[in-house]
Structures are given as C-alpha cells and as structure tokens.
Image (cartoon, rainbow, N blue to C red; front, side, top):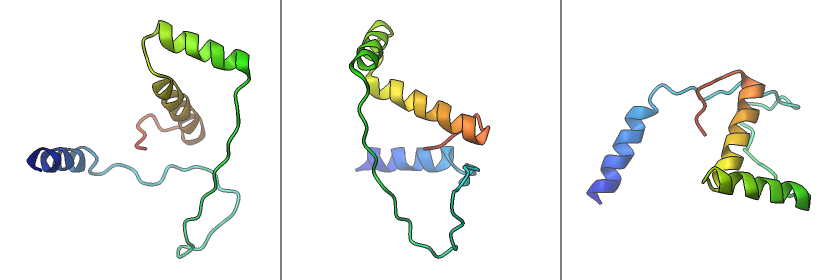
Length: 87
C-alpha cells in the first residue's frame, strides 16, 4: 500500500551511496560471474553461556536477537574497520 511505498522510498534515500563492498577477507578468489552459493553452519552454545546471555538480555531489556545482531556487527567491524555497516 501507500505506507509500504513510503517506507521503501525512505530506505532507498537513506541507503543511497552505502558501501556495497565490505573488505571482508576471502579464502578463495572467485570470478565476477561466479554464482553466489552459501552454506549454513549450525552450532550450540554451552548451557552456561546461553544462560548468561539470557540473563544479560533480560537485565538490559533487549531481545536475544538484538544481542546477536550487535555481536555480528562487532565482528564485521573488526574485519572491515568500518563503523557504518549495512546488513
């Protein structure tokens, strides 16, 4: 609807000029026409870590999703040096 279109236009303007390349190191050089194929890796946190994260997020009134998003952005910053990341 109109609201969705207005929201889309806002983000198009807001993200105009955002860097596409992050400078992440790659283990393999790929040709420009290579298909983008990814993988999924699953791991479990030890029970004690999961409990600590649950306690932290509850005490700071944030969701675990926001906690892990912040952790992911911190990791990307460490690899790229960029303080303005678009994911």
